[in-house]
Length: 148
Image (cartoon, rainbow, N blue to C red; front, side, top):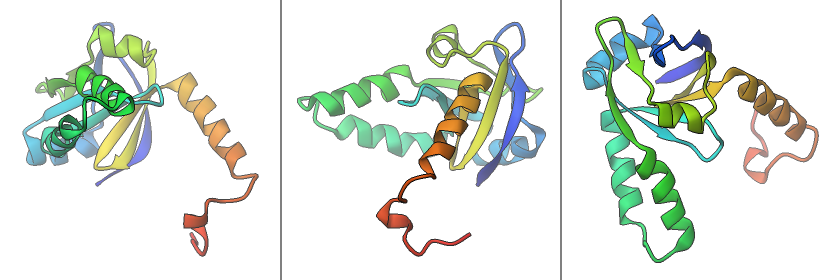
């Protein structure tokens, strides 16, 4: 289970050092085999390969005749890249994925349970401000009775 936020830097080659607190979990769960893909919100998603495979299979079973399903397949499956953590716990993010998510140097790695989101730091800050403004209105019905 991945949770928490970490401010990190990509190196000059586009490599991301996975924080030490996640490395052992990822090595045990998938031998460091990860899948990176694009997300509709403009960030990247990082999955342990065993977590990604059922998602990929479900996406591929969607109708290719439905334009929305096809667009989602093209985005998520079409951008999916297999990567392996090196001995230093780093993964190389391809130029295509770095460009898609506007990743330059300063990034945010956000734990989301079974996956991570990887954001450009400035885009993450803007997204956080937008999320806070959503709290000013009525909450969705599924949050009725929810308490922290």
